[in-house]
Image (cartoon, rainbow over all chains, first blue to last red; front, side, top):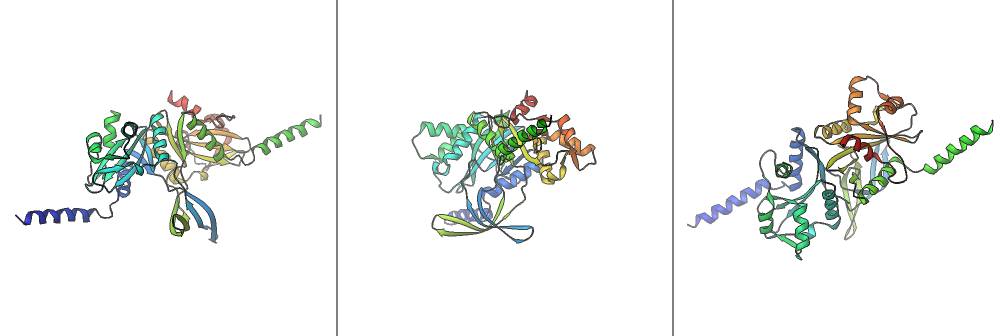
Length: 186
Length: 186
């Protein structure tokens, strides 16, 4: 009887070890490469926006940036094309087991997703609950409705589980978020 | 009789002065803001990709990048959504009056435009002939066919003028490249 909880603990730990370093960004990158190599979709992460102030030229053809600052992005991190449609999303990791804090979604990101939605693009978030290693496709429509109808500063895990789509996590494609979109497109 | 050419020269000059500093990038930026503010399209320039090596924190909440390098972009500079469709393009200024050198289009940019085209996105170049202050919408299909059927390292101005679409240049929107796309979409 005593051994059961211990074994369970060990198993959980080993799963966690295996996933160490496998960030959400990494998983999306691997998925996007799979999509591109298989002519399924062309989706890229945007570079981090940087305000460049000073550039030096230690060698004739080598520019070295010696002073620069992070700028606030005016859009989300990912966009691209799938079946002619415009895809736009941001990826959020969530360490809480019970809720996703809406502080994680910045005002400009919401505004951008709203614009994309207005123009007929497919706008969403991928939210990963680290504790469960679960990834959810949270459409902008759901997000907007939730924010408009609730005074809360967070969405509970249960609400997301009940209303959003769990994204299949497998070997290849790692994180098949486009299969969720298929339900919308078809 | 002598005065005519002089007057003409003066007029040309004054037009050039008025446009000084009005780069192609600037014109596209102004157009994109117009499109966004009028709920026509949501199109943004991607940040310049930079490899960040060293970051210092002179103040607690202020990160200063002190060593970074330019990376080669894997995509084009502009993308976004118009009437649900994915739009992707790059902007090229051309100082020659007679031809556009294909050296201006990098291998990875062609590859990316090809990917976008394959996935059903709308891929093109905006080429500006500085001498004429003319902007052309050069579809990826045209570009691809030209490269496949010609051994030349450049496309003549006359070929572009005869086969591509002149983009209307006006006050607002400054550079109405989406009106060219309307001919494809409808």
